[in-house]
Image: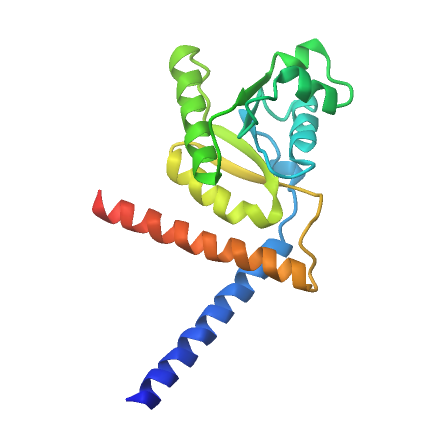
Length: 198
């Protein structure tokens, strides 16, 4: 019995290691596809240094009609955002909306879904697609949450380039991706059982 349990543990460990390796490789191979970098709106999830500046550049290049920044600190307003973005004019400021209600990725997804529904219902914007800006390591979990919260919206990831996960693993990159892999699997399990039980 002990031998069977030990063997089962080794098999499960090997499967987990194989899955993690695929998860890591999937992240390091992420890169922005400029040909697909266009949607009805642009969504930036706060947390990385260049997420907002990357999203603002995409807005300036007319890759979306507006920019929604989710998870903004309640003490930060549009003036603070404008100070951090070079070359922002009044026309661009009017296309930027801030969400202050999200404290985590699940909150981001709910906040984005609420924003899109409000814009479609109150302003008849007919939003059907969103370009999502976040860091490469955060893309899998963010897209999982966003697509679950907004199943009718086409979500396309646009990884921000700062602090990218290296192809050759380091201790810090392994730690960061391992943390994301664990969170991703927890979210994936929660979403699976939510769909089953609904």
